[in-house]
Image (cartoon, rainbow, N blue to C red; front, side, top):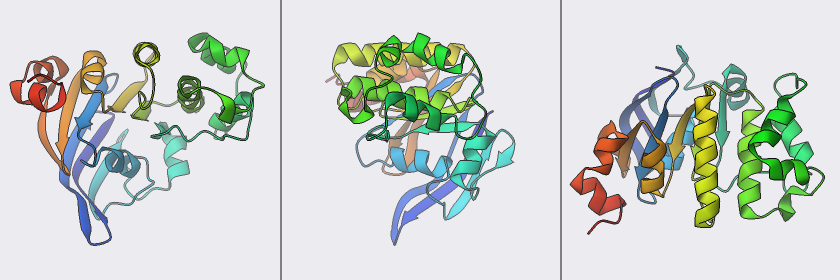
Length: 233
């Protein structure tokens, strides 16, 4: 397992957001975390990447407990986090945003070429101010910036948010390509159907608790999950 979350509890002040949650992400797989708005999906990702400190529990990444390690040190260990709403530097150019992705390591010749091969549009727009890009292009930039830290594990929070269906399809195909090159992916996604179609396995989160975990195919075929999250009625 590249990631094992054990008995994780997270509070916002006096409010319990996550309670004794455990989940695992096998190396080399795409794991989807699905659930309704407000279930705690973003909180889990932010806790895994060190942005939120848990009340209790452990986050074992690549054999080490990182539950209380600073976020920039977690990046150095091989984890990147593409946040909800992308978190790009809107006033910098596309190229400058990409350079920030490689901040923790030496940028090698060919690194940018690999990113531009995944997202040719970024090569065309490298001198453009990032805040002027379309939503889809900003998502491409956020994923590319995360890739430039050379992650073993990439956390993706709602990559399809606000995007047209065709752009969403393209982004999800690229996530599969990234995974095939050896990067493990933990994917939080409101579009449960799209997420489970590319994932190897999935977890269903309901108000801070995991209610189902199985292969993605089994979850796609689960009547309760289909009615609640996949729009089958």
